[in-house]
Length: 148
Image (tube, rainbow, N blue to C red; front, side):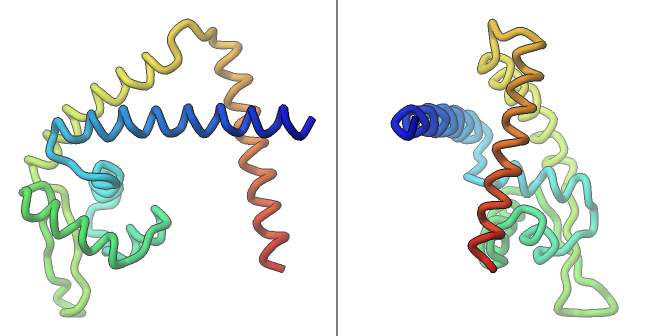
């Protein structure tokens, strides 16, 4: 059983890595770096958010978000506005160029995901989603056990 589980985990890891490689290759067509589409999407859904809010939501360091948002500003996809009540707090907004990139990006991302699940029935997708949710829940419980 342990060997079978190792092989299954290896297969899942390989799938994740392959998807990530495809995603990175696709992102580069738009001049986007790792994590930037996720940052742009978060800011689009939460206009006026701060870098700390993005970092907490995405689960990365504030320094990583600072670097990513700076690159996105330089590319013209994000705009930073100083909060008049707190000069150290900047609010972020997606620019029209950023909106356009996100719109173009979404179509290809949907295409990638469709290709990934080609030939898999709705029932199989529902089962896969259910199993994935249970596996994630089990991992979260395992992590909490390590924290205690």
